[in-house]
Structures are given as structure tokens and as C-alpha cells.
Image (cartoon, rainbow, N blue to C red):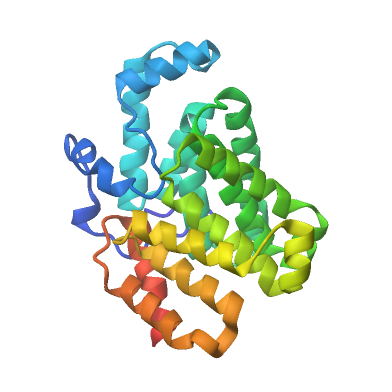
Length: 280
């Protein structure tokens, strides 16, 4: 279902509908990459205890959060974004993921993307202030800032200090959730993009970035989530940033793996679809 300014997800699939108990059963697989805790009454009650300003009725909030994630997984990204935004810091994780994945694949033009990512960064900053012990408060911030930096050129991003913000948020994520595969991928790309842009020596001296660290983090993500299309896609992207055409066979192999994986939800379908397009 399309909404104003939000292009509809182009590959609806009944398999991506996690109605009722299906969501809880599939949660571990769906969230292997981002380590998002299942938003049941118990989890929400614990968050409300940490920050009572966020709401009162844990049961009702848990239901709303689960519905927002159901919308995300089936590809109703605007609905997921809206439902998450209403819940403020409690829903920031789903809102930012929905808004960001939609912007990456279904939003045209850097200007529109920049505006979207800036809005997502504001949501993430509020989440970090309200729930600093939640790994994804920090990860979604790194994700939104990282995507913003890709819309404005790496040179501009480095000049604005965005790289440092991404690094700080990713370090905080991995301190709180050491098995966070998406953060490992993002950290690998952080190293790869800087090395690719400024060269090995300057990358090391100025940003503490290196090709060996890039590959280490990208491989760690593959180890944690071998069936995740995005882990393979970004591994290929990282190799290309670091080595150009020298390892193009490995890049193609990584994208081929991503393209052949069976998507579990709308995001993975978009990821796998992107990989297929690169190989055509």
C-alpha cells in the first residue's frame, strides 16, 4: 500500500505476513542481524521501568510495537514508520529501520533521501537520550548517519565529522550487543569507505581505519548471519571499495550468494533483488 511520498513495496508476498503467533516464532531468524529484542509485555515493562515518561500500559505498547514490526516485515514501510514514530523512543528502532530501508531502495533522488535520513537521525538521537542501554538506540543512529553520509559524498561527510559519529555509535552498539551482525557489517564498511577514499596511510593515521579491520568485521558479520543477503552484499561492496577490480570475482560471488538466498521478509527481498540486478 503506497502513501504520499512513500512508494509501495513492489514484491508483496504472503510468506512475509507474520500475523499472530508467527511473529514470535520467526523473530530469532528475522532479527539475527540486528539483535532486536522481541517486544513482548515483559521487555516493554522493563523499558518503562527505566524511563517511565515513555508510557504506562506495557501490554498495549507491546501489541502496537509488534504490529509495527509486522508492517515492516511485510513491506508496509510507511505504516511501520508511522506506528513506530508514535511510540517515540520505544518505537524508534522500527521507525528508523522502516524509513531507512524504504529510502535506500524505494525513494528517488538524493535530496529526498537526505531529508528522510535527517529526520531518522533526530529520532535516533531522542532514542539514545531516552534509552541509552538499548543497543539499537545506538545502531539506528549509526545507520541513519551512515546513509546520510552516502547521499552527500564521503569527502563532505568526513569534513562534517560524520565518520566519527558513525564509529562512536557502532562501538556503543557492539559494547552492548557483541553479536550484532549489522553493526559488524557497518563497521567493516566504515573502514573500507575511508581507506577507499583517503588511502591506507591517511586512513590509519587520521581515522584509525584499515583494510584488514574492514575485512575482519565484514567476515564476522558473515559468520554471525550466513543466510542474510545484506551481509553478503556489503562484503562484496567492502571488497570493491578496498580492492577495485582486483577481486571482482569474489565480489560477484558474494552478490551471487545474496541473490540466491531465500528472503524472509520485505527487506531481504529488496536486498536480494539489488544483488540480482548487479549481476545482470
